[in-house]
Every structure is written in C-alpha cells, then in structure tokens.
Length: 253
Image (cartoon, rainbow, N blue to C red; front, side, top):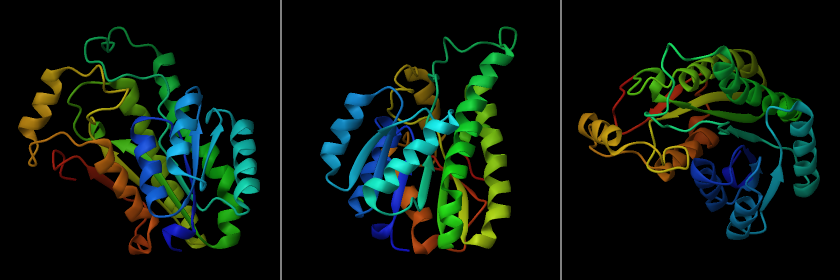
C-alpha cells in the first residue's frame, strides 16, 4: 500500500519528534491522526499546518477505552480504518542528567510509569487497530525506541528499561502478526536535538555524543521522522522485527 493511501496514527504527535513524524507522513499525502494527551493547542496548531487530511484527537494511550474511542473517531472521520501506527508517546520523562535518580534512589513506581507509557501504551494502540489490519491483510506498526538500550551515555534507568521492554514487545508482535501481512519494527534514535524532553540535556552530554559519533553531529527529530516513511513504504515489505538505530552511527548494531 502506498503511503498516500494509508491512515496513520501517531501517538504523542503534538510536539517534538511526534510532530515531525506527522509532517513527514502528511508530506507524502497520508491521512494523519495527531494524538495528544495534554497539549491541545499545539495539536490543533499542527493540524492547521498539515491541512485537511489531518485531525487532532485527545487520548491517554495508557487508557484502553480512550484509545478505542480515538480509533473509532478516526475511522468515522476519514471513512477508512487505520493502517499504520507509530507509537511515539513519552510519558512524564525529561532527559535531565542532573535530576536523574541514582540506583540508590530509584523506586519501582519510576519504572512502572515508563513501562505503562511505552509497553502498555503500544499494546493498547496495536490491539485497537488489530482487527481492521487483519481483515485488510495489511498493517504497519512502528515503535519508537532508543539507542540508550545499547549505549547508555547517561543511566536513564527507568526510561531505558521501558524501551528495552518495548523492543521485546516489538519482536513478539512481529512474530505473531506477520502471517496477517502486518509488520512491526522499532526505530531507535539517540538523544535528539532538540525536543521538549531533551531541552534540559546538558551541553556536556551533547558534546560527548558529537565527539563519538561518526557523522559528528546530534541527530535531529526530522532526520529520525523520515525513517518512519521507510517502514511504512512498500520498500520495507519484507522487513519486520527489526530495530533500526538512527543516531549518526554512534551505535552500530
């Protein structure tokens, strides 16, 4: 299926990386669902920018019923089912190396927040769209991960653990859903310059990344966003269960 024929749900799409992913798909003519949790004004401003083939819908991805209602509303609005899901939402986390809790101070509740945002959120969106994807014998699911799983430049314990678990979900879903023409992949960036979540990242950390990255630069959101188009396109039709690291070569996996 061409990207221009797809209806794409992007979670956490009102700002940062999610907004750039929305722009990438809109630029290819897809129907775009800009999911947001709290940033209503930013979401509607983005939809105005993207045009008539975009809609903003509020939903907390951790809430199964809200996700189901969002999917139903999107289907009614566009007159067709969601074909493509990008699980991008980030719940209550900042890449702040100064404020990050140490191993001594971590609590299980810190991990639970990130597991709910990463794994539960992705499970909810996948399940809400799965029946339609199976009937269509087509689906494209992309989960946004992180190269911190392979190279923890900063020990963001709870965030990285949530994303590592999301990689497990990605590969298990790929194994089961491949028979229905549904691919499931992960795209893992490094710390991006600059999103709301990385706005508190210190110059020292960005300097370490630049100095040890072959391309000698920090990846930006637009560069990672464009990679989602590959996994949605016919060019990736034989690719599933993969984790593509997009970080200028810092991690060679």
